[in-house]
Amino acid sequence: MKNLFTRALTGAIFVLVLVGAICLHSYYFLVVFGLITGLLLWEFYGLLKHYENAAIKRLVNSLGGAYLFVATFGYANGLSGGGIFLPYILFLIYILVSELYDKTSNPINNWALTLFGQIYCAGTFSLLNFITPVPDPWSGEISFYPHLTLAIFVFAWMNDTGAYLIGSLFGKRRLFERISPKKSWEGFFGGLAFAVIASLVFARFLPEHAWYLWMGIAFTVVLFGTWGDLIESLIKRTLGVKDSGHILPGHGGMLDRFDSVMLAIPATYVYIELFIQN
Image (cartoon, rainbow, N blue to C red; front, side, top):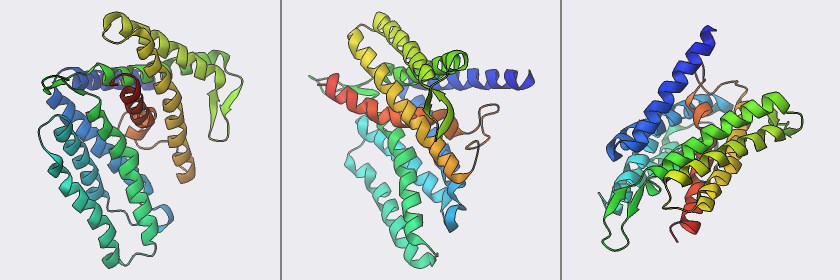
């Protein structure tokens, strides 16, 4: 009972913080999601630190990825030109050159793991900065439009809820038993149904996009979110850990909470560019 209360309280605070960051102001968005990006990287590199003699520069790499999020925020919101990415380019050069002097046993492994973390954590979350700001087609002025970003997270949460409820009650056919034995096809379609219902609610209150476009976002989030969840499960299975961390009481680590959106974000960005912006 105590664990259930802890899990519920943590989940409620988690949702309130994220929704507030997405909806209240662009600078709240910058601070909260910049911090999340840094924590994701810190946790990810912590998991890999001792994997196959990897020598990971945990703090430097985490700060570098967090800077990428800040840089894309500035660029996407028209606050800075492309020069804001120069420090990040220098950081990438440093990652490559530093192995010449560190004399580690497996520099290729270090490069691969470091750059994978930058793509997997920082790269995916940085794309949120190209979804949230919307330029006016006539004036070019950029406005803060949080609804598409909010939809990604709400649809992901509804998918998780529906998959858990329907999967627990009716799940028999394994979805991907080799990676995640508990996931079922029944749970997958249950999560999809919950997300589609949520998309119709968005269409009702935000009619600037047609209902089928909102539904398309829901399908995209569920499909790629499921793959994202399985990818994180594969990472943990490879590393031999149950949870990615313990920063969120009752919920595990940051990667455990954001695994599905980390693949849903880039997929939704592609969807938006193809079917909504154009």
